[in-house]
Length: 285
Image (cartoon, rainbow, N blue to C red; front, side):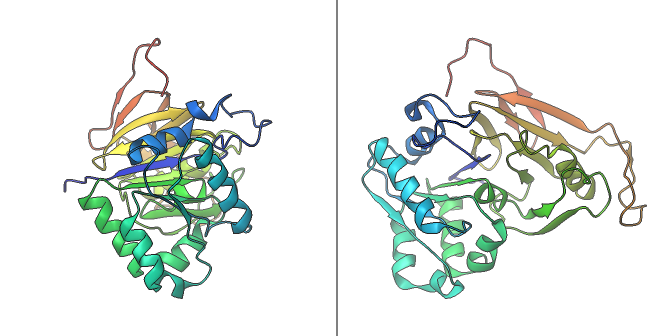
């Protein structure tokens, strides 16, 4: 199926032009992740809809994103603070979604997004527009993790090579071919996504470092953006996978898991499982 829209999953802690202490932040917001979101959405005149539903402090998070996008020159900004599922059926929110060029999901708890929005009229409009229009869906941390069909909801990073340590549920299903994890390097989540891929070896795992994201076109073509790295996990060539054989709580074995570590401007083809690494002097995006 041909998909016209664009997905931009982000690993968290993207530069908003506010914090300066984060290790992975870019020096200037104009060169960072959110500038790519604005560009993909059509420029500074684009209508950007910020949804802080995942956050425990939605008012503060909404204001931070308003500040960040205004700093980039955007003026057509709206915050859709959905705290109850009924608000996903509100005619005012539905009208905003129909007129937006981009939706930006904040971080927090991805299960809050699915419990309040998944399956609603709002969700159906997003899905339809993503498939049929030049519509951008961006999300950071929890907002990125919810994009997949098989969604990681939690689990210990230190114990995640133990079968059953990773908890999963159904996500928003914008890109069913991926399993997405965020804050990947800083929080040591290699084992967590490895177990997820062992459970679903036909899917590709995507681990996103902080202040790093992927622009996904046609539901397939990935380009890395930001200051860190992304890691793709391909389980299709596994020669040994004990996931189906073991009891819960048992250490797992995986052999020939293919892992690709990519950085800014590198490309990945999800369908072909193919990496294209650009020359080292390629422009930073």
